[in-house]
Length: 637
Image 1 (tube, rainbow, N blue to C red):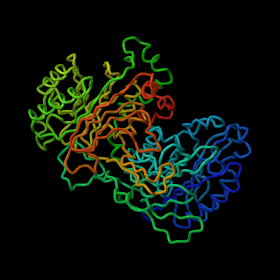
Image 2: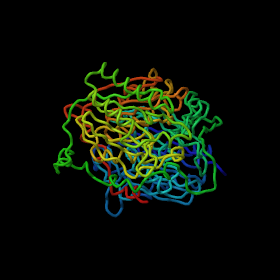
Image 3: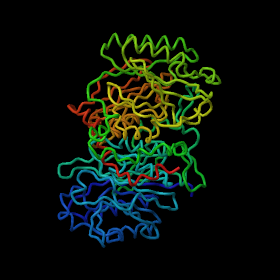
Image 4: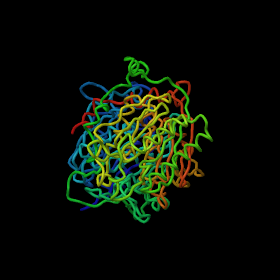
């Protein structure tokens, strides 16, 4: 057998009705197994419901693992030779401590269990933080890890599982507050090149509405099958062991890519526009079709080979282990007076997306000066303007060494003068020749006071490596009147560690000159019975990885992407200034995006605690809720 069928079971449990819940879940599980599913995932707290107000209220319904519920489901795993992951309210028989847990059951019995480590706001009313780490198990269908609901909001969790060899992440959840499948789930699959089997609950409980949207996501972030609301089973076919091909690398800055070339990270727009994949409903005896579409190939290896994981820079990631945001940032960063946070304020920042003339430095510099003049004319209070990667030269195969220049050099001297003339900060990406002749892709920030800050791209993909070397260090924060700023370059954003390290150092704004043609954004088509979204609403940017990077790190993110004819489907021509506050989750995303060939975008950001965005940027609640003791694998070389 070269492939396996995975199933996500969507279900609405009722509180105080454990026996009924269990019977209905067994029925759905057996239907999935009879249809050929061999990896079956059920929701978080599937047998009890979720919104318990206290340990005392939940106490009649907790159980041990193994226990009565796992014993009942083991009859199915033995009968069908399948694996089942089920979310339970667990009590430890020795300590009496309660946990939000999940059990992995297989044909031979209990394989293992996991206890949720990143607790949502209602969990601490009765549950302790999990104490079993982040385990990964071998199955005959590949290596599998488990994350429960809020766990996946933290990129560290999925990354640790992937580094331990997980090829699939079973994801029981009670996700709420946004239309699902969540863009965050898709991001976790893509950045780790793993399959995510997300079993969400739906419906209402104690006034809270859950999102549904259970799905199976391929290792390129591609949705293989999903449903909106209602009890049911989502099936998709996965390879037993997969190896992502070289085509899975996003097109970046290495060469001019013909319009007809397709990257592996490109979303399957045709699949997303088609009707939902067939889903088994209870008592539905129709022949079941399976949803496929992952751009992957079978291989005999037992651990997934990931281009992303191979190109990580773990020696640079020590800040991921810092617990800097356990303390109020103004206290933590101001403790030593040489590096205090800049005062909070409002500032105007902008990005420019334009079509670069390849190999024509003088023409590009002239155009950049013209864009600056236009921007300052239209927005006199503008303080920062960001241009794309390689904005001064573009990309010319075989000539990058010739186009490289030292810093300071022609480009930095010219644009530094422009910054002084127009009294603003300018950021762009360029090809740099180091003192020893080494070629780098470098981000530059030039200020009106005449100072120049640089950062050499540390995360190179194969196309970059044809002509450039990686930088040796991640950037340090730069304090300017706008706030605390960090520089990255396009492909750095594909590695969650890069932005996370900057966020741990208190950065308010990450500036990213980019030349990325993928992954492109993905919309959810209206009329698919989406649980939290009106059928009239269609959001063409439901999944945009840059939006996730801003939100998960509580930063403003300014991405100035290169323009390119015919590249819209692959993510080129998509630039934006992304907000640290999650978009209004029952409406289309409201972050401003540029989706034309050329354009100027200016907006006001705030780092002041007087407003919602500023409070989130400075407090960085997402970082405070991390459990850094679980993340040591992230820095292992």
